[in-house]
Image (cartoon, rainbow, N blue to C red; front, side, top):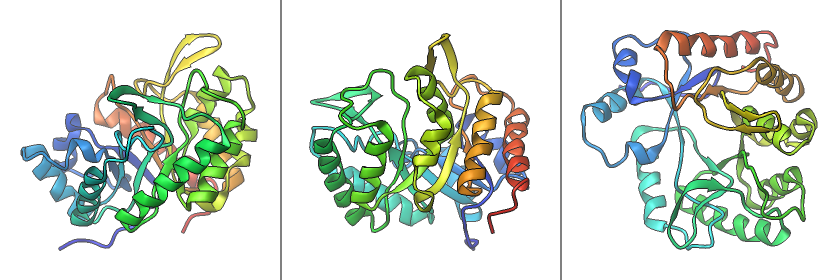
Length: 277
């Protein structure tokens, strides 16, 4: 029997490294999990069976890797239909993707920034509407980290807000990406967070990164979250109210108990404000 699901509290990105541990004993402090649909929807191994069992009993969101919403290439309609079927089959609450592109006459194997122009806003918003029509639900878009902007006709915040307003999409607020970009592009991360529409935020991400140089941070999801990022998350809660927040860890994955320590820290910060229902 499938339980009633909702998105609240603190979550964790599900990895095969620790799916067995979660299957054996699911932590009471863990409120939801996130998966990349590309990694699960066409597989048939034991881990997928474990995922299916977890999805019956716990709240899940999907965070995609290959929609390439800003690409000059045509949308992969068949792929979007497969994603919809996966979401429907497992009762997954939301499907999020990156406000970027990863293909242009072939796969680029990286998340590239979309030019910050009005022309790009119009183009991407129409593609988002098409995806939403197929999914029959809003697309949730993540603000991404980037290293060299392709165009600065608009600011990053103006571009992001225009996309959300014109397309009807929702927002995945990645606090670590805001911090990374604020260092790499020398802007005020708090001002950026305040510029975003509260009513659009569905959930958030927090993660670790790698300091390549004093003025260059690489978004790796391969380290512990640092104190300035924790402080920025707290500021986001102060300004927007508490929103569900997920810990991302993609590399150098430690013991699940260590990951849960950071998940529990999210919950402690959330509890400080007692705003979400």
